Image 1 (cartoon, rainbow, N blue to C red):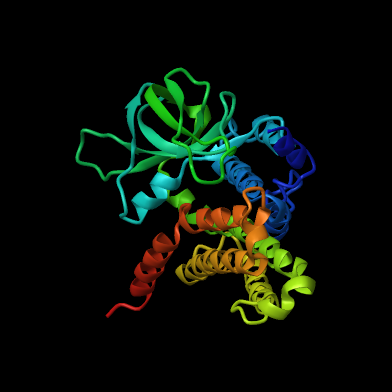
Image 2: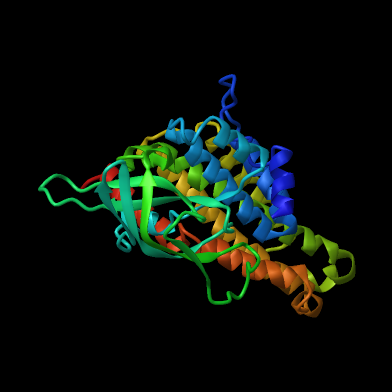
Length: 338
């Protein structure tokens, strides 16, 4: 956590946020900063993304209780946050149901439910969450988005089962029992209009994780070229070919990052496709790096085998490759009805 605070203090996790003087944020710079860290450690890149999108939620809320000094402390790295939108994103894609339920009460909501895993957490951290609002009347259903404080009464963090990689990311299951959420913690009510506005940036920022892992994998191939190039030349996915493909993808991502709040369907399809390409290239590059390095890359202490597991994480973390492909197909069908 100390490293994250140092990165935040250096501005590595707030480049995408609008400045106090109204200067727009730079999503491309935020992605590049994340990639530099992920090139060395994918888990660090992932936690940077968590902090980045938590800042996005705070700023996008327009809520004086979440902006102002609270956002400023987040930007400085004095406080740390994460994102609990894995389940809501799957819910909006008709993959699963919302796990948190919110009951309206005087002054806010009472929230109950369990999120199986949320990252970049500690007892004094917070994260963005979405709950289904429970109503007795015939009105349309809706969701509300809020910042969940891990130290709030009614919140319990429980240790997750051990994962095959990405340990050390502060990942817990979050149990809410009669958690009161007041006006100062509301990001959006209803949630969907805000989600539609920030979804492009949310997904684009994730590309920084993949970018770093891909470049790190390619660099590890070049590291053994002098010694093993005579035999590695017979492998597929050689470093020069992967680098060319990655450079083209990175250019595409940085171009998309120029307009992160474009709400058009065509734009979001392009963002999803770039994110999917990044995950797929991540898998290929990490696997090819292991093939290039051979036994030395298979050692438990090798960064090469670690990247294989990091790449697998990029492929399954929400939105996973299958989720991305499902959404691309659905949105494309809406754009071109039969």
